[in-house]
Amino acid sequence: MSKVNLLFVLTAVAAMLLGLHLALIRLGYVLPGMGLAPYHGPVMVVGFLGSLIALERAVALRRGWVYAAPPLLLLGGLMAMFNPTAMLLGAVGALVVVGVFAHLTLKYGHRPQWVVMGLGALMLAAGNLLYALKYPITYVQSYWILFLVFTIAGERLELSILLIPRRGVVSTFYVPVLMATLGAVVGSGPILGISYILFALWLSYYDVAGRNVRGSGLVRFVALNLLLGYVWLFLGGVGWLLGWGYDFRIHSITLGFVFGMIFAHAPIIFPAILGFQFKFRPYLYASTFLLHLSLVVRFLLDKKVGGLLGVIAVLLYFVSMRTLINFRR
Image (cartoon, rainbow, N blue to C red):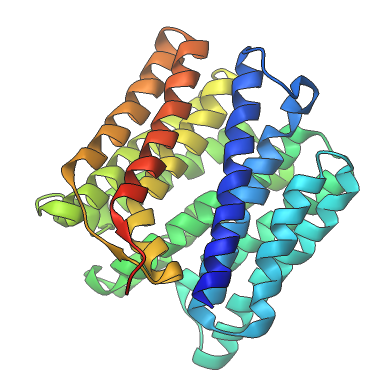
């Protein structure tokens, strides 16, 4: 199965490269495919991130039916460039992921993290359906962002839950979840903003990253990327609460938070999916530094230059990752 997984990961990475290409066009760079620039979001969120997250679920559960989700999400995200109705494929793929958490709950009982991640997959399904029905992208994107936030937050909750001192603390995690869901449904930026702030504060305090940042090697690298991501989630929440510019509200979360999480998790998730060996080297920090520098430049100095630096940071990260892996078991 690892060869199939490798082929799919490479296809998803190709979708990421397309999404980055479209991002540069949106920033004002003159490149081929100018007319496809509006589809940057669907390609990145659904085609790339959605399909990879679904593949992770399939590998973890090892059930054949779950493997339907990654190609459905990939095809939905890519084919939507030519016909928005094709995003119905992505909606079906997301519902398969919802089924994963329903299956786990029925088999093993209630787990808070499964509720949150399952709700995230449901947000993706709703966003994809709304996109197929041609709802405004400014409304749809709130659902897509919540898919990413809920998925990441649920994963971090799962890893940290045994270290939380009081059981009742976990239930407080539902407060920002419910607020964010309400904010997306009613289209309220301030409600969404408060929920992002609460997520960032909760995760910053209870996540194991706060302890692990004092470690070394890969442990410290992962923790530092997580904590920096929580800073951007907090700032993004402030931006949503106060109605700051569109670019800041979207990319402080999708780039600062989400790609910060990707940088943190990829050295752990990719070896699990593909079955390769990974050896950490400190030069991987260069990508982290450049990513966060790019956001500062983007928001405070020059959007076009900062955006280009962000694309370079992502490419540098994946090239660096390739130099650190060994596909021999």
